[in-house]
Length: 338
Image (cartoon, rainbow, N blue to C red; front, side, top):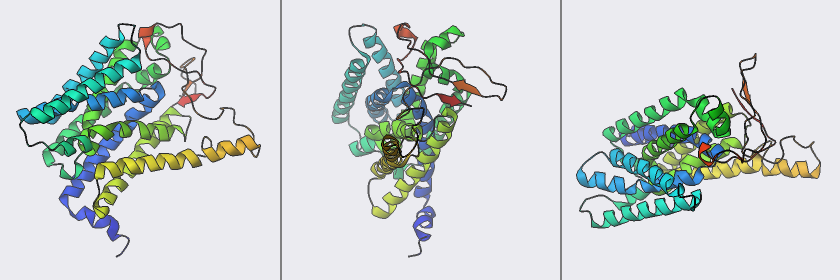
């Protein structure tokens, strides 16, 4: 068979074109949001929201409603409940997340077992992107566009919040509202990716692209370009492999993304394992940024004459109020935002 046929033959079918379109939309929005989640350290929050939408999906299918409606409602409910449990000050954030998402996920499994419907458990848990209809694709496109527009409009505010919520408060922004906006976008994004990879694997699309891009650059603006590019490429390859191997599409999408991360983790020119090994052996001068890109704190955001705002590490802000935003880990590696 001509190698070109490996690419062109799947494109002759409408269901493959819809699957590729849905996957690309989900890959872009998940990758963009993952850049903020990775910087803030909200990986577990993404896992919680993606699992917590299961009851909403089951109820929507049972009532004949769009699955996105119930999923968004329960995603936002999970965010509110996590905040309520955390407000007790006796329960840590990770414990609150674990309590809420496991409880809601268990509720979804119970509803799935007792609700009379024709819903397939496998399609909900692991996705069914090859079965996406035109209506589903339109729904995914609308939600993805909503997330993209809000991220574009509030990009600088969200980035400042991610680095230093205390500084954001000092210049008149509300860290609480920005955090709520980011969590709301997380809930909607989880719904976008739900039909592509399912409830269980959504968290991978929300974390892997940002983590991969972070190994390749110190500039946050470049992260926002690298992450969706790699995510779309890996997701497209996963869909094509699922066609030729007759295997689970959601699993292959995540497997390709995970394999790409492993490759970058080893070969990244500055922060890869090989580069760090050479640095330790003295084959190259030590990089001033250390062995990796940890979470950086912002000392100032100032428009330079060249039109570039630079985010630099600052001193510890542990004295900040608990409600000002997520905690940060100081680093010697500045991250520059265009």
